[in-house]
Image (cartoon, rainbow, N blue to C red; front, side, top):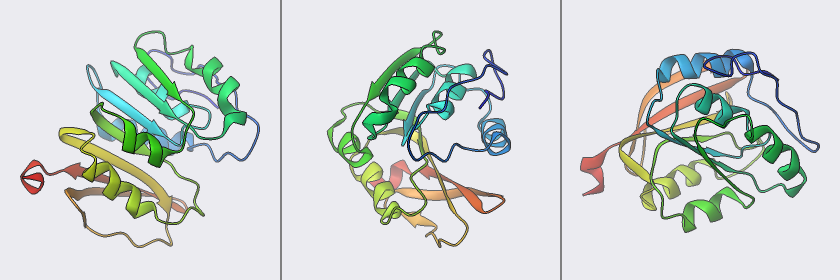
Amino acid sequence: MRITGGIYCNRRIKCPKGVIRPAMDRMRESMFSILGGLYGLSFLDLFSGSGIVGIEAASRGASSVTFVEKDRIKKVVLHENVKIADNCKTEIFIMPAERFISLTKNKFDIVFLDPPFPLKKKQELLELVSKKNILNPSGLVIIHHPVEEIWQEKIDTLLLEDKRKYGRSILLFYRYNVQESN
């Protein structure tokens, strides 16, 4: 796997053992093109796996990236890969995404979720992100899911802003609506 843009463009990262479905190069490149420059923004990479999405965010200027992965088998390779991102503050948490969302006191500008496609209750994860107030004002939540799933336009305080299809998967971009939280 390789970084598709930014200061680490074309650097390769290792793929950890275990079940992994890395985000396609084309999809990542497109997503980060849509996002534009990430300078000064905080990025949360839930279901990190190899860490490629969070490292790509660092490569494109994010000031801090938090990686969350529950599979302990991936821990060593994730730590090794994240060393590439020496231009920003990084943190790694080995725990379930739901637990991290419930416990964190931090707020993020962008939250990216790439849960296993068979995982049930993905929409509930977005509700939890909204209810636990981990997004900065006008923050963005992006979720990668299979095309077969139907998603709501509004999930708690999150409003669907954009939708992009890549083969058999879709990226949904939800914007945090500050007025809805009051």
